[in-house]
Length: 134
Image (cartoon, rainbow, N blue to C red; front, side, top):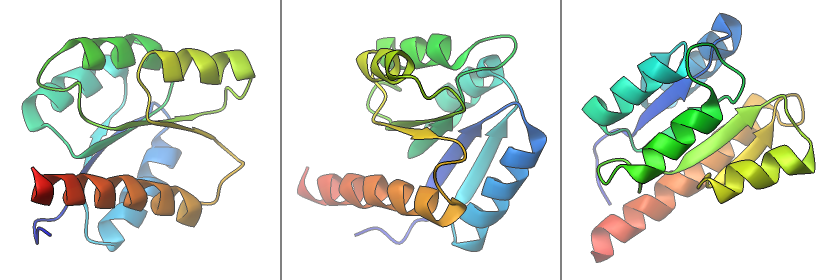
């Protein structure tokens, strides 16, 4: 296991959601990067290579679907787990995101911040184990 804090990239256009989750993740010792749209998220993901990405789907400039596609087409970012965090909760939205490579899907309002933290923790722990065994 590594002692290095995990880096979480939050790609979300709503400042209130970003602030809530940034504060929560920082409180639990994670490094947090913030992007207010998909284009900034793309730039940060490629430059910083975060351990996990929390991604909204409905955003200006570049949608979450577009960013997800780009992330999974690029060799440097395709293995980064991406958890979709969206108000879109229809099965077709969820299926499309999973087909584009999302690791998990969270519908906003159906999970508490602590539950979101727990889901992210599971992915980070899995990545940590894989790093040790590689």
